[in-house]
Amino acid sequence: MGEKKAKIAVLVSGGGTNLQAILDAQKSGIIKSGEVNLVVSNNSKAYALERAANAGVDTLVVLKKEYGSQEAFEDAIIKALDDRGIDLIILAGFMSILSKHFTDHYPKRIINVHPALIPSFCGEGFYGLKVHEAALAKGVKVSGATVHFVNEIPDGGEIIAQKAVYVEDGDTPETLQRRIMEQAEWIILPQAAEKICAQIIGGE
Ligand code: GAR
Image (tube, rainbow, N blue to C red; front, top):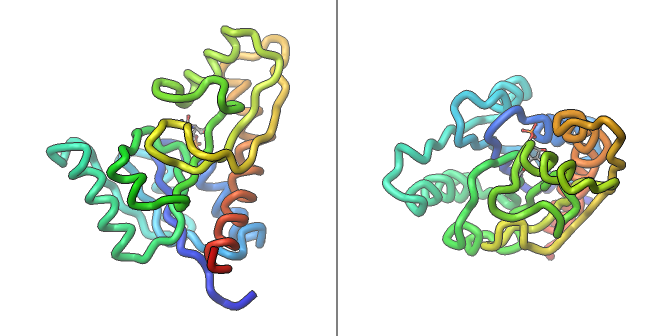
């Protein structure tokens, strides 16, 4: 493999533990075919922005309220990504649904991590702790995480990777969220990112 690396942008909204997993995987060599070039947040207070700055990665805050429409908000992100020649967009706890306008611009070039085994507990309204609250309310004994391509259907794109995690007696949404992050998300998201980056630089 040559020196060429896919340029990655990570879109975030909050704590950024999945961003951290990607940055750590880059450092340790698990991600070797790509490099995080930009972190975009739709929340100026996201701790993920500090994680990016600590790693020396450029950041950009794009606030929906500063744009007149969803399309104008998405165009601002598209411009920033295209100006840098971004190859792969990773949604890592990005809590804003992107419309067909955005997703059509990057076919098979956007991936997302979802904290459940799709098709369970997914789609509009299922994000963050709400996903784990719904899983516990249903009484499932196994949940997990999914990495998938992003298209215009929320959580509807092709599945790339999944990992199951046991629900334990006495779990709260918070304890289940943490276990799914540790045992699934932080592992399969970097692995999937490396797989797709390798395909991109390989010309697929
Ligand atoms: C993660 O559990 C991620 O899977 C989830 O939000 C959390 C973000 O945490 N994403 C969604 O629910 C998207 N539908 P992080 O900011 O620490 O990575």
